[in-house]
Length: 296
Ligand code: GLN
Image (cartoon, rainbow, N blue to C red; front, side, top):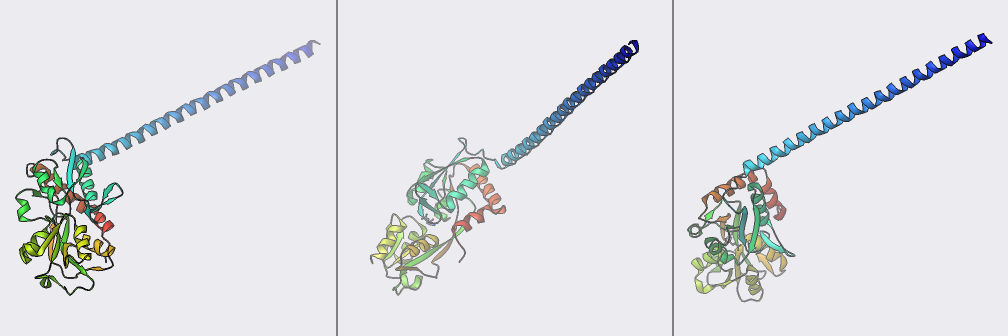
């Protein structure tokens, strides 16, 4: 009995020890897992923080980069106000309520580059220069041709596109080029270079100017004028919309389009030119033009 008891107690002790050991083992295993988990989580957090810092640094670098470009100090209110005449496709026209086209997109890219907000003001083309002079707007972007006369009133940025003055006639017209315009009735858009050249070359009496290019085209369709002199891209748009009209191959004049800017802020001119150069170099300028003017 004693023996049995002894055996039993030994067994009990052994069992108890085994149980304890297993508990301890289990516990330490649990502890280990918890520790591992903690280390893992710590590592993860560290990695995340590292990533965040990296992202932040990238963002900071970007901000710094645009801060570099943001020589945008010339305009105290941080808003680039530009006048346009949104009846000049594909440079500027309405798509629903929105003014779209080459010029607004270039203006937006310039403003973005300089860290300015952009505000486009739609007005008569002939009022743009006066609005710049009176300080209503900082400048104008409107397929505007650089001329000596305008340079007396405004600064011009470097040119961003070439403009051509074209002649639109009816399909059955005998007018084949500028030489045939002598003695004919010519329709133009008031205050544009086409209007000025036509008056100089063919006499005021032979030129009828309209507020809108589209109105000159209506007059041509109605037989009230024999030809319309207007910039080539809108000319192509107008002719495409009128089966009865064609644009002559012969150019009447070749000119440079640029952004007109107030003469009272030379720093703005420097900034806009710097932005245009950057947009030319990174291909953005050409991308915008190609979006609206498809190669023929
Ligand atoms: N390029 C022409 C000019 O500057 C016409 C511009 C326009 O009508 N938007 O006079």
